[in-house]
Image (cartoon, rainbow, N blue to C red; front, side):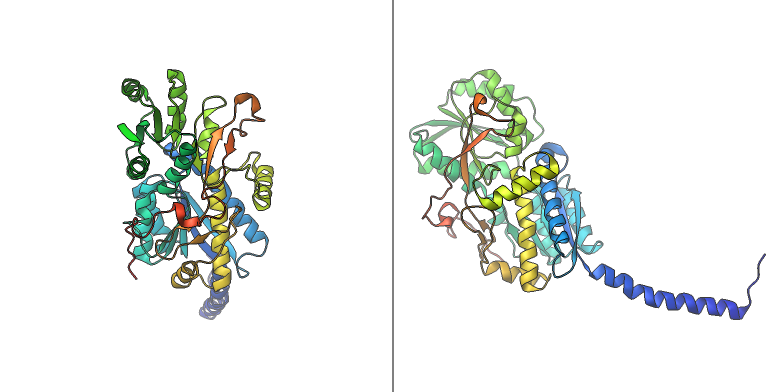
Length: 414
């Protein structure tokens, strides 16, 4: 066995201590040279398909920002994970802040999961950008100072589609049946739809609440047949919309199916010839805007397919975050909140710039109704939709389609 003198051991210990003293600042410097951002999005379950588009969009944005020198010379360390369900989303959000050192959080599509992340953000005083959750309640009675909302809320989706339906004479005096997802998002969307029907002399003659794990819609479609409405309205989400539309086509109903919620990825998944009617969207890859076209071209080249609307919203959200950190020169929550609350303008690849309202933290932007191309006019499986004119119309105030302070019970605590 090799033996070492006490003097040798002391020298070795001193050398190790010296190396540690040199190494620790180097390690800390490397860590502080990165901006850690926690990202959560559903990659499994009924929202998993559109969640995968969201992850591609944010990944592309992070790579572009880092390739251009990062934010204030620091690289983004994007920690992106499957949110799974509300309980898991909450646990992961807490861990990202407490253990992983995330300076802020963003992402999510499920309104239920978004609510639990909002609560984590408020508890830890960290900013959270909810990118895809549409429940009015999140920016209403459940709002908090640390949460910002990037997607259009349910009321705006209803107003976008309702405007188009009114122009076609499909609302006043008509009888509606709605099929609604049985969770916070669906309940909230139904509430907005009822308000619209009431304000426009339409009658809701039936509504069916449907659990999020239902795949066979035959029992509900039989009830629709018995009700004999003028219009059937879909208030579902994720792959349930895809399944409903396919089964609706098989039933051969004469009354039109419209919807107050649809993501372009869900539309593509339905296949050519199945989707019809009028639906809302926040963005579409055929939008005639130079910045949007450049994004679509880069995304398509990188991933071999066009971006879905969640890819777009995740992409522009990380770019807005980078702009805010750069201009405030801070990742501190108070500085970022102050920046967004002064209604700073953002180019989000649309006709008009967007901004966050100071009192409910909603990103105010245009929305669009869309209809479906005849099958023989589609260039490919992604060329399905025809965008209507932006809502609100040119010249009208952007906030005219959003809930007002009177309609929205948001009360943020300082």
